[in-house]
Image 1 (cartoon, rainbow, N blue to C red):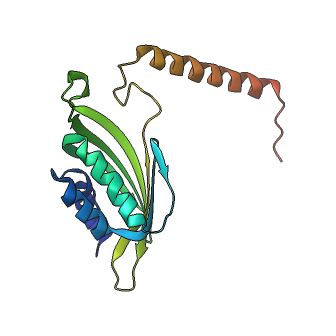
Image 2 (cartoon, rainbow, N blue to C red; image 1 turned 120 degrees about the horizontal axis):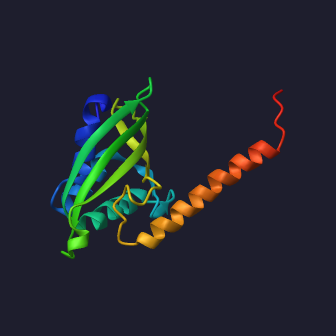
Length: 174
């Protein structure tokens, strides 16, 4: 990328929205450094030799199992060096399995990118870290209502427990 501030939305779209997985793979090669790392709540990918092949494979497999991928940007932020970017977006897709409950799935994502400026002045993605909300209902996981209830109970218990400990333990400021 020559100008990441103005090009990042197009880059993200080129990694998610193309219909053919081979096009997605070509775009990964175009925008990621050869030693790029990628992590996601579903997997952790560490730096490996020929890492671009692994990052490319992850993107291609994700594309193979979904169709009609669309991105709606909620916000894009850069630091003053343009080497760190945070993107909030909603990715909507359908599963290739064509089950009703897997159609039109919308997943809110918070993506953090580290960009590296190359010798030729272009910016490359060297690290991608994606996060999803911890509220399962927010990401459409209504398939498992009991799982959502367990999550709410754990969250409530943790909140009450933290508050009780905070009241019981004397905290002195230095």
